[in-house]
Length: 457
Image 1 (tube, one colour):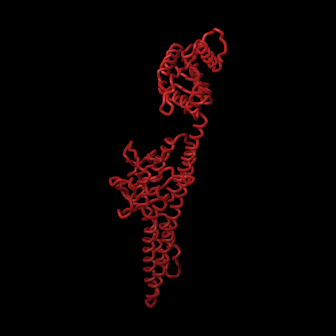
Image 2 (image 1 turned 90 degrees about the vertical axis):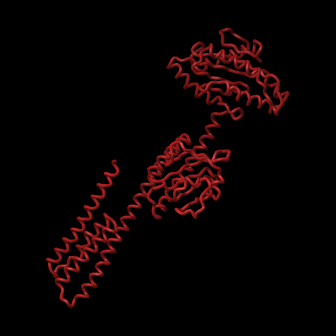
Image 3 (image 1 turned 120 degrees about the vertical axis):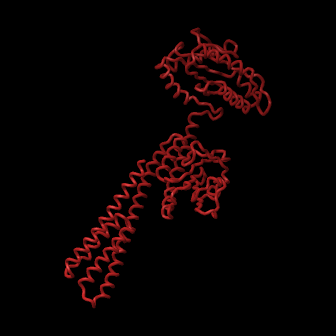
């Protein structure tokens, strides 16, 4: 209920200003009449006209200009001789043109300054939102910012931002506004003329314009624009904006201003999406093993240093399982390095499928893997290691559709706090237990003990 009250107050204040300006014009006319022909009051009529044209717009200024002209003509008719009748009429018409022109000029100047001020506010908001988009850590976070921005900057519209995945087989919405909650949009890239042409595609109010196939008949609500998101000649997605059904129609000038805003905002969105994808790619390269897709040793060290402190603070255990493939060089010798790579890839995928959601699987180096099990004590970690040894032995590894024989692994198990509280001690304990398993005949899992052992060649 706030908005209607505010609008009512605004309308009352506008009406009051108009009546005051009208009263001022009449007051000048009365003073002009009482002063006689000796004193000229022509310039004083311009004061209420200028005020009304500047504050209330062209229509109010013209109304006051007409009243002021009639007041001047009435005063001149009273004091001027009869032979000056045509002169008064001509002079009155001239003054009417000057007064009305002044009102129109000031009204136009007022609109121009108002539009410029709105444009500056939009540009400032684009700059602020652009900085926020560049600081986003995910596409989903950027989508939330885009939704809120479109709601505030372009009220009375609805639309969505759809991005093209790496496969480039379908566009999927990452930001929507003005639709039912939870509604998503997925369509083929060829269903949008903006993407096919590589330039904005605008549809007017009429049905005679060519509408993109991704805009269904029930969704068509009036003027709309599809803006392709481009970066370095590559299509990233499309920004679709249309007027809401039943909303007040925008003028041609308002639509032109909106299109300028959308083009500028679209450039910021494309830049932010490109930056996000580049960061995701660099993050992937920095934290993932390129062969298996598992986390690499660098990520493990960062994660372990952080999570180990957290586990100590909350007095929670953590399990360590160091895994090594038995006789891995044989697969490279007998089947080739491509077969060895397939074994590593398949083992990485198998380990991921067997672990819990919060567990970390990383490639430690070569054919060695490290499994980190938060909140798992020594007994639980040992059971998991034995289970993995058994399941890997029973699993069939393939290379080009052919079996590679039985693959076995050895595992060393350590746990916090049983075997230590710092990273180096726990990793050394798991590695030592792994060597124990190798010495004991491989194809088994052993927990770390204090017994000294030989180095396994």
